[in-house]
Length: 323
Image (tube, rainbow, N blue to C red; front, side, top):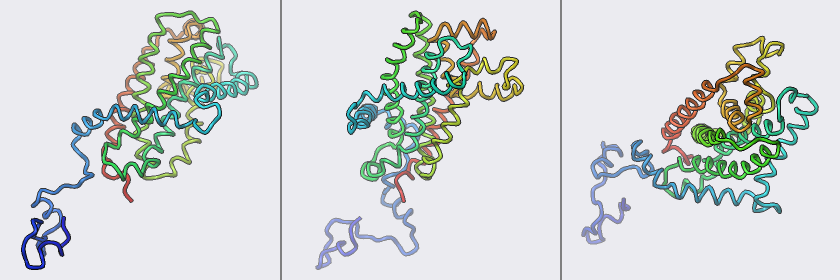
């Protein structure tokens, strides 16, 4: 809208701008409606918003790839850290929980068992922690350009997927090195990762909105994620811990609650489809012959997180970057 002093020439002639100011009793909303003006950053309808996000899929992948590469540009080993970080984490957990505390007792091929848990849980863990910072760390981009803000947590999920794909090379080398034969059952690993990716996208969007308006969330998350890791069967076999003679068996309700935990669901399904010896151990020794309940939980968590997380993030679309 032009400045009032420029509405006419010094001689009183019109210069082709809006010559009528709002009436005294007219609100700005009424004035905008009268001239067909609309808020530039207004939240579009849901269908249009989804279409806008889909139209930027190439940007999401390119942004994620650039961010992935830039993470290690200052280190001498560069992208090798994508493989070293989960391996070092697995080594620390094996030293403490496998050797010192003896949680590996009775679990066959404990190293592949542990590495699978660390790698797959790390996929979700990094999506949550990075998602919480996805909006706050890109405020300059948000304030400079108009684009669907959902592309930012989506890009974070893609970054973590790219890192997982690199880590899976090491995972399969370890699995095969411990004598696990190649089988058609391993093809089920693809839908497991797909469902976990859907869950990660949803939970990343939830954390993105929370982190956008309360930066203290990022300080609390390391403690929350560490607790979640210990409750997700990453370093121990939950079916084994629920057998008679173990402390957890006395609290059946707690065991069932832990089995519904999404962190446990995707880790345990991955072990079942990749580790035939562990699958046989659970079936023969622990008398658990089906994974139907785990698959139901996996699908349910993926759908609820993806739809709910997207809607939760979308409802605050026009508030991101303000203040």
